[in-house]
Length: 254
Image (cartoon, rainbow, N blue to C red; front, side, top):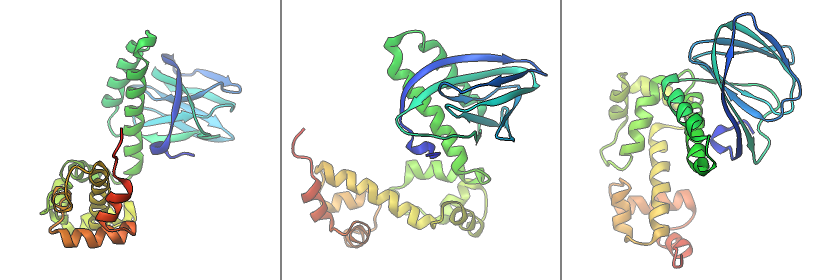
């Protein structure tokens, strides 16, 4: 699968911290579960199928279930490890994930480790693990272009502003509008404008399904300049007018 944004975690088996000294050499045979490992200060080289994978404060590693590999300690340190199961196949080789901010991940891990002591905290433990996965996925999605992160976060909170422009987003990243558009399109294979439209259309689908607001109000709440423009774009994206979509999807029973 490899797409962390679609991962379905069914169980968390261990939330532990392993101390790995410099010069350590071990072999793992037929790993029982998937694992996620990272470090705040140390460095490990995993070797699997004659390829090396580095885990350090800038790189987390997903360890494949059912695989065998060797471990060498390059630098002493503590390595948080989360062993887990998935609903679907995840990987049969190591997956290296860039870490944007190790402090955020360590904060969630420490909470996980404390809460894991009691079964009654399972939901919260799962929530924290998904938050770690999301942070790693976000870093991976923007790998090489973390410069765009301020714009993505700004978009998440302000997609409904009608005056939202490429310049507004570029200013969040402290780069020129031309450079921003080029980086964004290269990274996401879509223009910033189309990205915004997609988010707005998805929000409109939510509001139309809930059936609380009329079409004009939905258009305004999603940041479209006028309901006619909204209706045209909505039909282009979904094949239905907003009214047709609401009639087919409106929730009338709960």
